Structures are given as structure tokens and as C-alpha cells.
Amino acid sequence: MSRRQNGVSIYDVAKAAGVSIATVSRTLNGGTSVSPEIARRVTDAVDALGYIPARAAQDLSNRRSRMLAAILPSLDYAIYARKAEAFRARAASRGYGLLLATSNWSLETEYEQCVDLIRSGAEGIMLEGGLHQTVVYEVLQRRGIPYVNTSTYKPKGEHPSIGFSNIEIGARAARHLLDLGHTDIGVIAGRMATNDRTSERVVGIRKALEERGLVLRENRVIECEYRIGDARQAFRHLLSASPAPTALVCTNDVLALGAVLESQHADIPIPDRVSIVGYDDLDWAAHLKPGLTTFYVPTAEIGERSADYLISRIEGHSAVDHSELEVPFILRASTGPAPGTTDFRRERTRLPSSK
Image 1 (tube, rainbow, N blue to C red):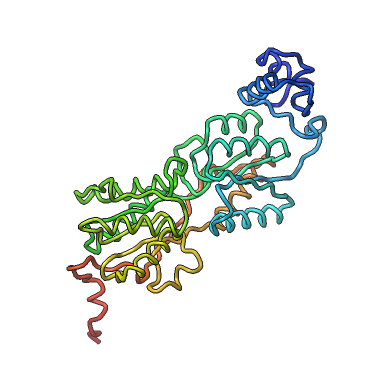
Image 2 (cartoon, helix red, strand yellow):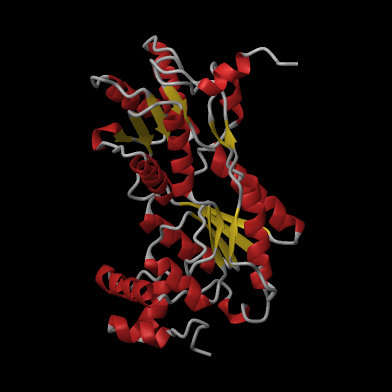
């Protein structure tokens, strides 16, 4: 058959590119006799139509690869490595292998990786977050390949999701600081243009402040790369303001660590002069001095549930399209009452027992 499962054939590609079927075939097989201009026209048509000539396409309809795939922003961060390992282990326990790719936070690269994974026989794909190029969804849907967005929860959205509301997480962090008397809160965030989890946490922080009649000023939000040195520089910039914020929300623990180190370098006591909240609860968060107040993200459970969801869809079983997971708030010593205020809850814990 000339037509693929997604309804696009090599004839469609040839027509769109204005070339012969033989030229399309030579281009896709890496032939050297095709000019760069013709090759570009063919590959543009392939991308536009979502045509994917899978490896061993002749018998893909007769056998299965039993391979799941995951596209993550990076493996440089423990949170993603933990998710990938949980996803792999659960898939292996059910007889599936793993294909793994990283996008380096690029939506264009993510699409290219998605196409490559499908060509390699991926039967289901785990994606990070809910911000993807429309063409990613289109090519997966045309091929009938199950997918799931993770670390996000959109129960009314059209795309399956396993995770939690990042807006609510951001709001919870801000409300904790507001309850401690902080009204001037700074934010150190990762790049928001390509990371919807980060941008939604900032939305949540802003929402919580507005609930109390306050505003998150733009000069209180600093974006930077997910590197400790960059976070230190960002916090140094916030501290140079007059007055400086008395509390800080970081959109992950790596950024929070940079803020803690910069505070220590500048002899700014935590939490007496500045309170800091992180996000992830990485292994070392409890061992900082002071211990980091943060959120525990159930990354391993997300990876396991994602594998279960995709396998259920692949094997034709019913599956819940949207699953919300609990994200516990871990209160440690890096947050305290705003300077000049009293944390009455802590004062009560110091009172002698009435018994």
C-alpha cells in the first residue's frame, strides 16, 4: 500500500514538492544525486504533511516494536533523570523498552526528536509539560500514537495530562510567605517562553498577591538559566534594590540553592532577613543550613503512571486521560516571619503545655 496510517502517501509528498516519486524516495534514503534545493523542498513537504517513513515500514503493520519513548528538556537535572528512570523501569516491568531524547528547551528540537522517535518505532511518547508546537500533536494524532503531557494537569484540556496545577503550586508558595507577613516578594524563574510549568508558577504567585491586594512588580521577577551561578547573579540583582524583597520564590531547587549561597556570601541571614522557597525537594534540600522550604514533586510516580497510561492505550485498554497528583509542601527553616513582624504560630509552639 502506498498510503500510511495517517492518510499521507509518498504521492502526496511528491505532489507538494513538485517532484517525482523517485526523487522523494532518493531524498528520504539519503541519495547524493539530489540537489540541496530539491532536498529542501522534499523535506519541507514531509514536515508539512506529517509523512513519516518509519524504519522497516513494510512490516510495521504486522509486528510491534514494544518501545515507549520520552522527550525531556534535559538530563542535566536530577528531576528529569529521576522521571526517566521511573518511566524506563515501569516500561521494562511490562515488557517494553525505552527510547529517550532531549530537546534542550527548544520546541523546534522537540518536534524533530518526536519525528525521529516515531521513525525509530516508538509506540507511545511521554512529553514534558503542555507547551508544544501544534505540529507535534498533529503528527502523533495522525499516526495514532498515544502520548501524555506530564508535570501538568489540565482536566478540561484536549490532551492527556498527568501531574498537578503549577498555577496552584505558585500560589501556595506565595500564600505561605504572605501568611508570614511578607508583602515584598521576589521571584527567580527559569526561561518562561519555552517552559509553561515555570510561567504558570509565576502566574500563581501573581494571583496570590492580587488576592491580598498586592502586585508582583515586573522588576521583582528575574529570569535566568537553570544554573547556580546564574541564580546567584539574579538574586544579587534583586538584593541591590532599595528596599530589597524580604522573601523569594524560586521555580526550582537549583535556583533556590544559588539564592541561598548568594545570601551566605553577602552575610544576609536566612530567614531573619530573607525567606526562600524552592520547588522539587531534591535530595540535598533537607541538608542545607538552613533546610530549604520547598515542594516535593512526585516525579517517579509521574514516570510510572505515564508508562502505565501509554501501555494501556497501546494495548487497547481504557485509561483515565487526566490524573492529578498531590504535591506536598515541605516546611523547613529557610522561611520565617517578615522582618519586624511576629510569627504567632511559632510563638504558640514555645508556650509551656497547660497540662
